[in-house]
Length: 518
Image (cartoon, rainbow, N blue to C red; front, side, top):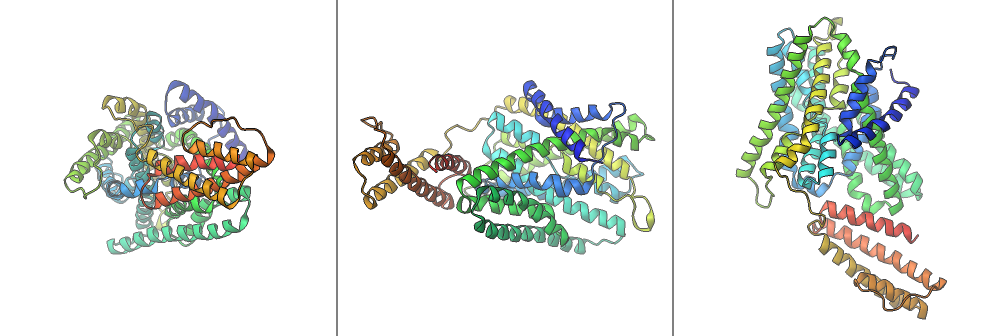
């Protein structure tokens, strides 16, 4: 199992592997998985297992939280229909299709156990896909759909997985009770996450220290997961709900320093854990192969390729088919997704650590002490699907985007110019109000005039003369300006006048300005 020394060594090893990937132009996860697989077969190296509870309670919460924290809520809401079609409809279709195909292909694998495999492989992990998309400047709509789908379908697939395992281990399951339990687990998890996020926000308002606020924020995903898990609801949905709530309210409740520190820490932690996870996936290769020594290589290869091919083909058919139908019944005002967009979304169905953790979480025995049917084979097929989809799709996504001519987002985002103009107006009004309430002296007046010229896009006529009192006056005026601009920016966001991407960009600029005048 993992020890502190092994974890530190693996994290250190992730850095050169990620460096090699970037030098070669490959997505980080590809090199990390291959590096882990190579390490697995080093003679004398002990087998390194992954305890599912470590994955679910330690590794996944901060990663999911970071994704939910940065999820553009406005764009997520705008793309909610295609996201739900994928995150719920495609998950159910994948579970059924993989279950039926696996049972037909492997008659010794009971249908119920095959359905467990289907639920495991229904969740996507588009870490590599999103990294490629962002480097190439893919349309924000595509990134939002793929990212939003992966966030929601994680919870959907895990709830279905839990119900399927429960049905096998207890030999008692009915569709009505399953639906009720599904709703309870999903809705309960989201509710617990929101409650924990509100409680954390109340405590946060009492701290008044940016470092403590940042540490307190890091604890939120773990608290949300454990609280939901303790009442037998979805910890994954609790983390997602808490992250989305926190991301939506952070402009109003967090200081600039707290936001910059907290978001930077969350990004670094998520990157480190993601890297560690992909190396751990590769390290499981020897464990998985050893457990299936009784199977022939040809049969295992046939099973792996067939299951992975069904996963890829089903996703492509579902995305392209549902996209065509959606264009016929699209609500007024909803932007259509073009064929190049749909093609990239359909090719972004990589599987990852969530699937492997779920497979490893399958109990070894069922009621009466009998072995769980096909457990080792399910773990192997999960591992092979992760490796095949990751290596095939993440490596070919870049040439696919270039081949179909997917247009990049413009640097000057829609609405950004208007938003900057509104913020400049807010700055000038704040500056006039400041000068009226605190009439400045001669030097301070010149400094404020130069500051005003910045927002009028003019160059000051005369160079400023350094004067300590004038500089202090200017600093106070700038603090008032930043507060006024922040209020105007938040108001524009709430009224839907500025996109999430523009809002985040402008808020980050304001945060840096605020820190510079503290």
